[in-house]
Image (cartoon, rainbow, N blue to C red; front, side):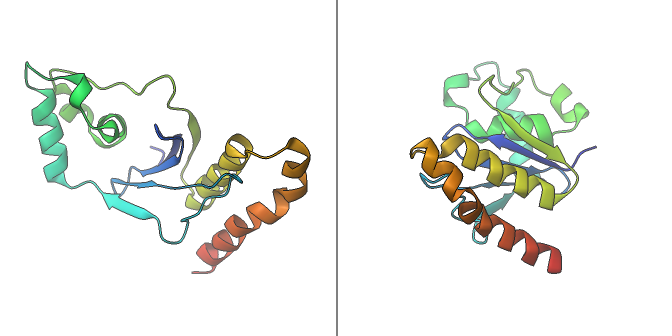
Length: 151
């Protein structure tokens, strides 16, 4: 089983899913295609209570897709076991727009792929500036990954 999945989240920012620790992190990025909060990202662990609550909601006859939390789709897909999914009356599919950026067992590779994807897809300045700025803007990610590997 692969541990880390990175997706393009609904709001246009990447979401990193850790299936081993059942945790997700949503990252913010700027108009230069740079992740702003690599060091201070808000990581949330999905407790067994949250999973039980999701199963309970998905087991009700009157379940309304319009009212479900967007994050529920990721929890259902990556954190629930096959047995837990079988308990649910409804299933939550990822949308076609939920772009998969990376899947790997290495956090370093997942973060690097995420940073490069954001830079390639979210940069809002002229193309000639983009190539000129590439190394500088991805340097922040490289320094973070170096520190991550050192620890």
